[in-house]
Length: 313
Image (cartoon, rainbow, N blue to C red; front, top):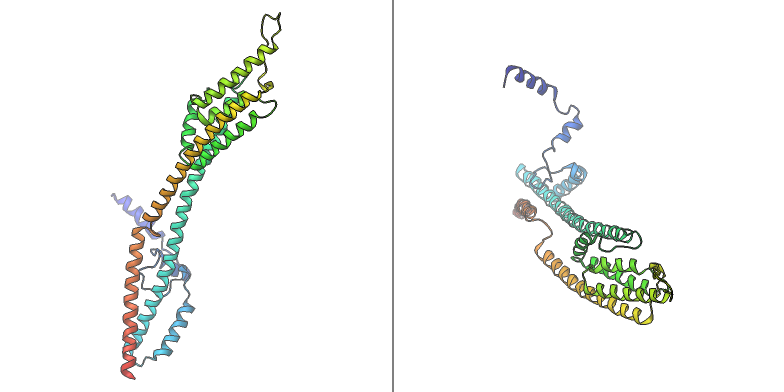
């Protein structure tokens, strides 16, 4: 370090002289204090402790033992400090448990937000697939990305339940007198995947219904068959029944996956509860050591006080 740097350092150091008011000086005493577990101070105001409570207990103890010499007064003081520390440790323990539970709740909230984000992406990709084609939806346009989202959703029971609800919605849409089958097929593809066998069955049924409708509308002298609009197809009872059976099978399969996921989540929660104590090991160890020290000092001082009282009696 050069002479100029030393002079600058000395000048900067002389400018910071710490708190000047009495209140600031009193507060600065506790700058290095975290929770007061091992502090021998009888009262720490910023932890919510009050001097009035300590003095009230002190008066009661002095009235109880009526010390006639300095030794008994010292034992009363040690007993007071030990009791104050024991009360402080109880409050710190309750606070640490509350903080630990809060951290667990935050972790759960993070998982909920992750699932909510997946649901938002699912709906966005479904909307893109519906609006991707010039004349009709294209369920294969976002297939690979939708497959990734669907696999993530299937890792949670809530995500599987969400997919199952959409399959149920597809059954409702097909049962309407006039429906838009390609949109409904996009919804099924989003829930199962475009290569799923049950989706392929649904797609084939709709294709056959559309071909029959086009053949019916084709005139004898027409050279080109007119295209049946996607939103103007009415399903015959047999086709509707086949679609319902296929979609019910998808619901059953998703329901089975949901049960497996719920069992896995329940087992995981049990293991976490069994292996995760109320407090982290390091915090619990500090509290245990502080509690042992405070109790040892308190009961030793109290025992000596009672012993001297019995000797005097």
